[in-house]
Length: 88
Image (cartoon, rainbow, N blue to C red):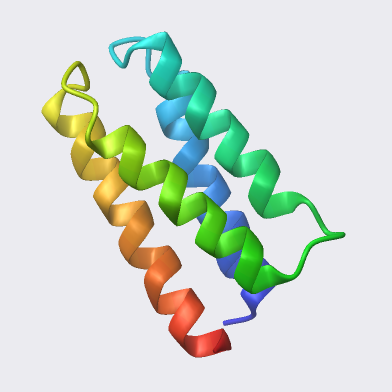
């Protein structure tokens, strides 16, 4: 699968977080920022992935996030980690 297609799938997963009103607003806003980071084409793909992983790890550590939201974030991090390894 192409990198662009995988990034698009990750962005779709981030959209699920953004649209879930049971997840705190600050986490939804951070998910939106991650999506914008990943789609910012003027940065290298490795930089975009690493920056997003860093932000997602911060989001997962938030004590107010519900368990299903944390699980979604861990899944996204996992996808990005494998994408990073395939590109590196």
